[in-house]
Length: 215
Image (cartoon, rainbow, N blue to C red):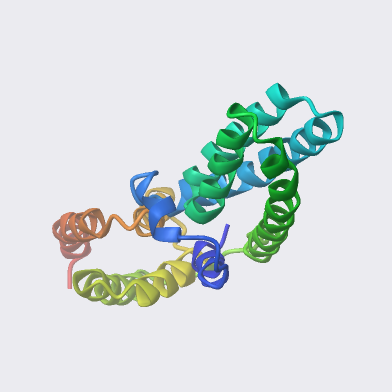
């Protein structure tokens, strides 16, 4: 998944507080993206349950559906919608069935809109299969220097762009390719300290390898 593109789409969804959602998964953008995918699947089932419970006036099932929606909405950072679900859950528990009836349709409409927006964002960011092009070690070292500077200053867009470029390359060495993939994972999770540490630890071993080749 292209996480940089995904978050570019997500910031335009008004009902979603991505920073709240990220805080619930230790700021792992990959985990948050997967959570959004699961939300879309679970939300549809919950909406169907809510709709059926309302039609049958099954208030126990209605309460459970609202309770489930409250939790999964809070989990992705959709606090306002989670609050709406909570209010309907309370109304059902208190026997205020008029509120249950009048409040369900607007909530379901907002939910359907959120699910549609998330599906668009997720499908847009779906990573396409690609063939990696060969690149030189000098190219890698240049990009690592740039990545080190970007992560040192918290330039997230630049860091995303750099690892995105690196992941399109192969260096004909399994260990080096694995190193690049690991850096990409650190950047995706916003673990910039680990990025800096990994690059700095690589430099001495790389210098030794180059010196062994001789002048």
